Length: 353
Image 1: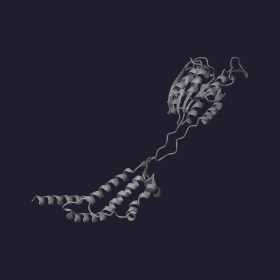
Image 2: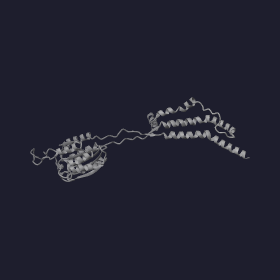
Image 3: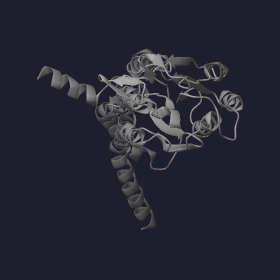
Image 4: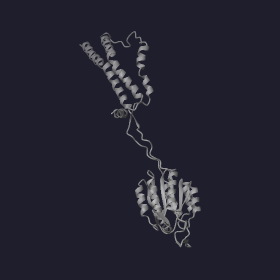
């Protein structure tokens, strides 16, 4: 109960921005008691009926002493409070997370159909193993905007950058070997990723490229595409994925023509040119470890601490000060003005008679 009451009070009043201005509160009292009164020997304006107004003036002065201080001090107090800038706590807000714009590029060439991976105790093709690992990677990227590119003979964007990781996962799971052609266009995939990322905030652009082959198709040379990525501040992490070519064997002896062709040197140059890293994964466990490393290298920035903004409330005491000052003036001079006006009209009427 006490905590709720304290929270309620804190919501209504969060303190002053300039509390030192409250030291001005006693200034009128100090001026009243320390400064001498202003001497006045004679009235500044002589009128024929001046003596008749003396009583009204004295009466007004007496009432001023009685009536003026309360409203005047109230107006001054409210002015000091307004100058100190009273504040109120607003609703709780949470700064948004500053996360990555992450593009995933997945090779769907014919070689991704090679069944040289083990997943859950059974032999699967490379693409199936990659899907399982990447889906787990997506679960850890809450807050990132993720997009998906697949490439074979050509490169296609299956999903734009989005916070909806479930839709990216569905597009990934629906992908099949040969969907984009049977060859490998590394340069086109990198160029397409740069095109999608270059309009985003600098310093947060990341491309994770997974392939199991060498560049055999496409219109753009991979190194030219890497230079384009570097110019647009896109970091590239390359993953060479595939077994050692021992999946197909006869009595334990690898069959000829089953060697794995992965241009690891080219992938290393692409990563180095953009400030990224190159990795080699020979099985699903290694691939999972690589994505865990990338997760640490490109951490998701968590949402900031919750804040309650302070709202300025000085207009309230300022308006009260103006109202109190106006009432003080009316109570001090209003009746006297009315009486003086009636008296002047009466004198004019007598003079006319």
